[in-house]
Length: 374
Image 1: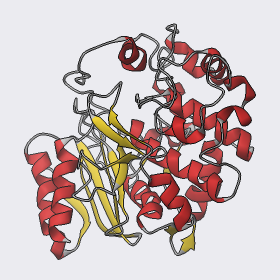
Image 2: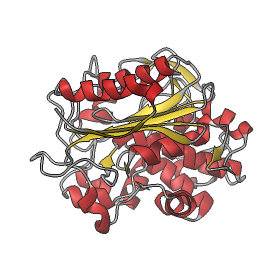
Image 3: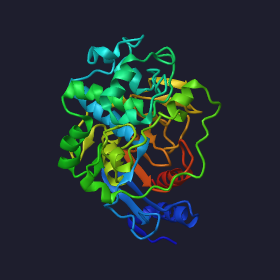
Image 4: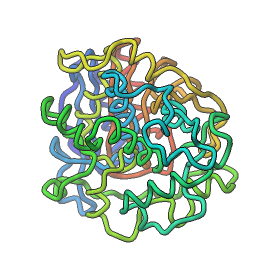
């Protein structure tokens, strides 16, 4: 039985029990779960091991790769530029990045792309997986490529490509990379252990990842799903973990603690504030989190409600009971969420992956216990 450390007020005793039960069920190797109310941590539970050999404890300095959970923070970073008047969600991507407006993509807006309606879930034709390590080559390919369905006619989840697209939008609007801006505007001033592009000096803190026992169920496979997830070049490969960690892919390779994630998501939960400072106006929070498309996703086998980069809880109810909650989940089980109704934000990170695309039972059990105590 793993030792459970961290904090949880007495009213959240059932959350601690649920966290311990995940370990008792042999569902965890190492994990951390943090919940904030009004931006202040009220739960921060840690347990298990950071390595497969079980020689290093999973602790408050352990960094976990969070894969697509990072899309929620990518969405937050874009929202900061909307707040500062450098971007508009209804602005076309080609107005900033003219080369993108090829092959029928000239009218795709930032909001459409963030809600996975751009028709670029992967490469077509298929590329070598090493391409992802050459940012300019990825951008040239995506700019030249035709959409795989008419843009704006439905969502089809973009697992990796959306990070390059939004990274370039951010760079052209702000002048900095998204990873640099996150460090300068959030991580350093607020003491948040969140990284897009992890320097080698931090690699020793990264936990080992135990891969899932089975691939995820994508439903009936077609060309769109193959490009997104199954083609050889659908994800970075061939260069090793260290090179992958150093890349800046806001959609896929962020490294974080659950504390940093929960506190960043509190910006959405509290109407725009972080540690007493105004980050976003309520108006921009509303723009960032409103529904932009709802229906059967063309890549993920679910009916989904997408906002401007956030997955909305409507219909799926994996982030608690409230439909207005937004968040994102990552490959293997990690997730982060923000609930403006209760002003609750939270995050779960771990290193033993499951095959669930969204709604991993481990964080669902924890989140349900949180709401039962509120």
